[in-house]
Figure 1 (spheres, rainbow, N blue to C red):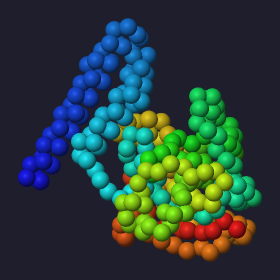
Figure 2: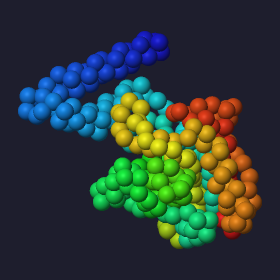
Figure 3: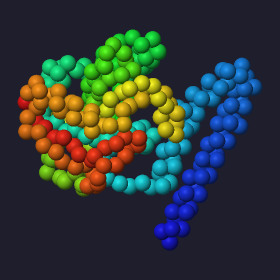
Figure 4: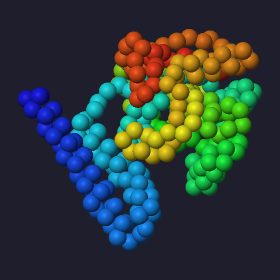
Length: 272
């Protein structure tokens, strides 16, 4: 019975894929091609496919497959695996901001139309933008609460960066291997001492997202190196203490999440 259900799910996903291709090629492109010059029709088709049709098709496909697992990584708005969780700091929002500021990092601006346009312009012209916004990734049922970055040189195309999600300290009593730890939750009050659950990666250039082909930053595969870089930076300046390590999700050996190599370890430290 289980194999039959799985077969039906895969057939539905296949049908969804065929429908998606038909919609993009024979509806969107044909309509645009009849009204616009060829190059403009291709551009419109790409925009509609990458940012409207494909994200919805991916979300629908994931719902059909009913993937239920304890996450050790963040997800995109389309439900695809994104940056692995690899860092947890304990403290208040003020302490978090003070620590990264002292280490020479800049807080990312909120993602708005204005900041998105400025980021796109800086990326194309290779102009500095120290407070560039981050795309939204999701954990605990919501987008990141705050993020920090440090440019590599003067280029906005390469940077160290980390996103954080606030989680109440009562969650620290729960094992990371239980579903309850990862269930959706509201952000704790701003002044509380909380767990700042982070996902750190290093941007290296320009790329396209899998399946939806949206324009985004390319990132270095080795998220362990980026986690260790941040921990070393904060430790050297005595901005964190009581450093230890725990495992995220299932206790697995080194594995790949999305295109990333992650050892599954999360560094946990208290903000000094």
